[in-house]
Image 1 (tube, helix red, strand yellow):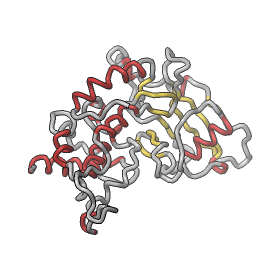
Image 2 (cartoon, helix red, strand yellow):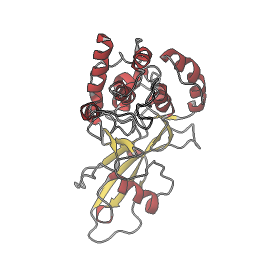
Image 3 (cartoon, rainbow, N blue to C red):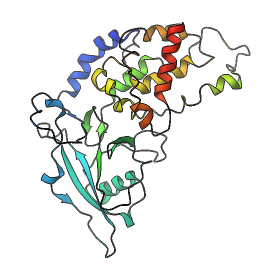
Image 4 (cartoon, rainbow, N blue to C red):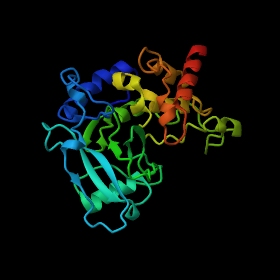
Length: 302
């Protein structure tokens, strides 16, 4: 893997050509909220998917007499057909046979209705962050998002917005993880522990890390941030900045000066305009906006 960057410009210059070539034919995820007319020419990479009104509904194979049927509209796009527009595919499920979470519905669709549906999932406990997606207009984890029991409400499921799509509900997070790597997310010290075994920390210093170390890097916050949408190649985004502050706040770390120097430019940190979509959408209840504000304070008083 490429060497860690020391500045935003180095990451941009070294990684951008490679990243561009790998995503040139991929779809770009957008959430269709209102009809868009005559905007295709200006937003060719972000055209809304074909409406579910123009695609057939795939129904559950066997219905019971007392079925509690609910409709799910799911974003579909395949790299095997790169010239075709994305589309919203409709599925109907009996909620009496489905678990309470949206992930349960997606697993049933894949296992029993349409095996071609592709999405990420792992722990089903809100720990791994794999199943991050946009559900009914909100970035969240499918395993933590309950299915609305109102069958008249039709749920819409998209990949994380403003990300290139690998397939269906799977976003390409290559750039996101490159940015995470760039902040050197590990303890850096020049001196050894006094007892030669572990680096001790007082309870009060340890408490400063609460609300920071719990981040699972699901990217829900970063992909909800307008500043990150428009500057994702240079602005680090809420998730990575929260992780950056986690190490700035750690009393055991001795390379805080280097960490601040890496953020001391116009783009990496200061593209945050405190819109606070990040704090509203975090499925773990964390506050990236506050962490970014703390970094700005530390930079101003350094």
